[in-house]
Image 1 (cartoon, rainbow over the protein chains, first blue to last red):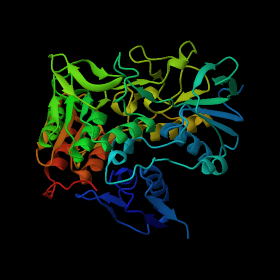
Image 2: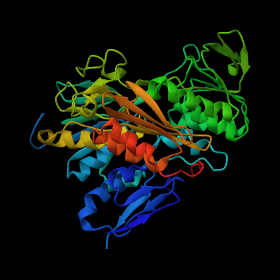
Image 3: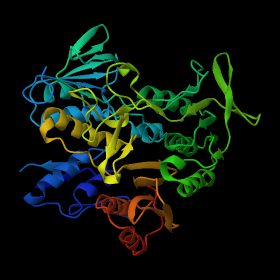
Image 4: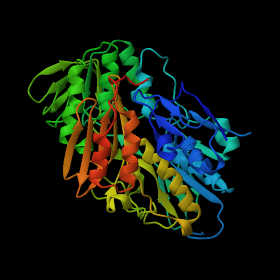
Length: 64
Length: 416
């Protein structure tokens, strides 16, 4: 899985981190750090939930 | 009509804001292929409300309506029959119909997501320059007044009012906030944290007057020119923003058989968001439901996250009631004031609130031996970890150990 993250849209609310903490972490300054830009398939459910949860719709899974 | 199991073909969602939209999207994601009708009282396409009191008021940006989806997407991708511009006015449970405008819409399953309306100040109806802030139209009116340099009075120092005050101060406009309580936000975050939030107003030049009631709006030629307080003073104002809470959008359900809460007329649901009428569920701000994570405490939340989660759950349960599970969630809300981000997770009703760190602020809420809530200001990297601890029913000691063993945090950064 590859991720597309629109950092201009992201406001660091952290709902993605709540769904998939292995993949997303909001930093001290409110910016998003992607811990794994190619998450393994086992994480698909979590990553899909993270993308769906984003209030600013900044996250997408790019299908190969 | 099928009420509990089996095939059905008419799914109706009343309320075209976040919870309603999420209901529709989840229904399609779950594979429901029948008709979906989405009914919204406003004429606008579904839009996002949090930005209305934040970015939408910012002078640095053109105001862009935060629309969720295009009409084409709703019609073609989601296959939704969109009925905007007229509210639903009644349910007839016996025949399975919702009355809208002059007509009726048949339902097999119904999700009510009518949200809430801003509470108004009695006697101020029709006075120009007096606004609540709930809808896109409200936000446009407030933005226009701020663009004109309005002297602003905010009635109610809650989160919405405080965000408007912050937006006005960012433009350098004079702002007075009038709050009837001695400390603002005590119901949402408790006394101690309410005090800390109040300090942000003082530090940023807003004139916060607590323990003060409003006697009335002073108007000339039908337009507000000031706010008269119960101490006899009058504050000049071109813009008066009323942020004194909301009323659940359920007037149309009186007598329908859908049970309403005696205190605020929100909808009383079970743990799966089912109402007292078969086949009818509810989602979002309108719902009271027992949250299993907090000892089945009945909750009615006015949070973005709650509306999104409820929408998804209500759709799943309406489509497949046999698989319905109790909706268990850790409440989460955020608010942006003066470049600071306030975040709260959990519930504020606690035996003790402990301020673990002053700068940047972090408070923990303890109930018995358990952590049930946390409030941070400018600690975005910690809040979701605290939310996880609350979801795991972690002990207070574990939460405290986490919060006191944090690496040194850099000086607070304004949110982007």
